[in-house]
Image: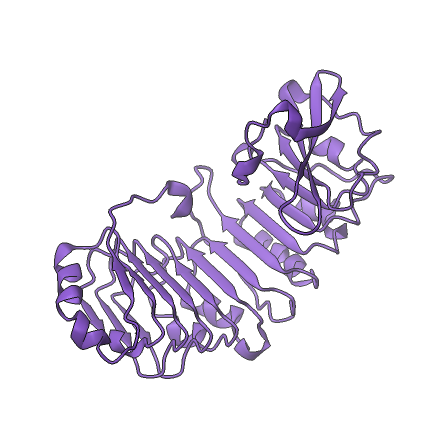
Length: 355
């Protein structure tokens, strides 16, 4: 059975299951977990050996927030769950959609997560009908012309709130990622990108920063050579910014005056070429958590004292000399702050999935 990222769903006891449907040799289980004031039903579907689903019980889920997690490739069957709202596929299996049957529709689908595309025909053969998506997570292996068509489809998903795109090769490594401006997506608040980007793509993507309502931005394996902070700093609603492994391969990062006015969390992970950070006065005035992890070449941090709201400074897997210098100058750096930040330096190693 596919185990989702929700660790609470692993290994349920008999009393945790409310109902169990047996479909041929396959179990479909509805799991109730009160994580908020509203009850949430999560449906896990395990299809070893290509067994098909008996859909009689699931075409009308007992709760409108029903979620389905799929193991193995059962894409042909999923079109029959016409009232389904949330679908999570096991990305490691490179799950794909087949053509949509004429008599079937997933018009109520709001979440589609973990889908893999290596053929753009999947868009034309049914995915383009999913106009009510609010959460979309795709991995794809597509040539740039096909990526352009994919980007145009994504731009039309006007209800989208969360978007994750992963451009990969046959080994799962990052390949070029094509993007177009997403400012038309007025509801988009969370954006995560894995794939090689050029500075030109960043400029196109955020051409009109005032139109964006992004609160969370994550970049991984982007390979950016030029400092993007002047552009990203204009995202006035951004609260969390994460630069993970190889997202930036330049030597300096410069946070200019009054940039990142709402930013609260900044994470810089495994940027192996980064040598210097500079923070100007009045930049990141609401930053509360700064994590610099595994940036082994970083020697110079100029302007740390300007981060007057900082409460946590995390320096895991950093060079001892860098940490020692920060601690040596701690009173001088943070002496003007009423509440200096807590400094931690654990040696925890990140999992591959987090880099």
